Image (tube, rainbow, N blue to C red; front, side, top):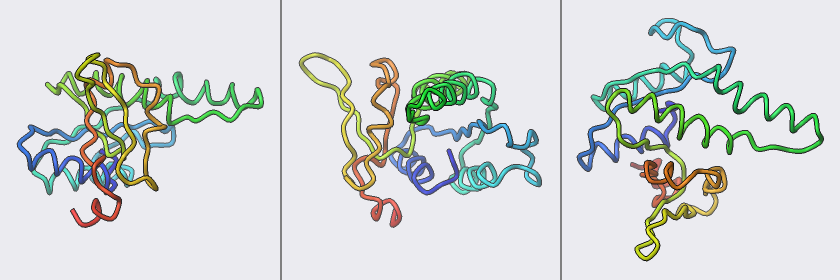
Length: 172
């Protein structure tokens, strides 16, 4: 949970349809304060915790700064220095959210990870492969940030707001 509207509505929708939901927030920025207590936590952690409390779900914060630097920041800097324009979100989704964070969530008993991405994932009945699809709101579609996810990662991904427009997310 980022504390924003998309991840908050995603959690609420899953809880509403009967899923056992836990909130997890990742700390990835080196400037994030180490303390996550209510008085000194960064605003995004406070916001996520507030939403989790309102939903009546447990909330956990995981420190992923080291792996984020290794898998996202360092490669980004290397590519940028080489004159290329990398997209750090692609690396973050593949190596942090749908790998390291999923592993942490599994330690709490989670089987899947849900995010507030405006995207969809479906299963092809013939091949059995998971298919990444654009979200309903073409102006907010985020499937391109997820293109590097593996089949295994897509099998464990939920995108509860992918069928909604941003306006509908705001009214949920």
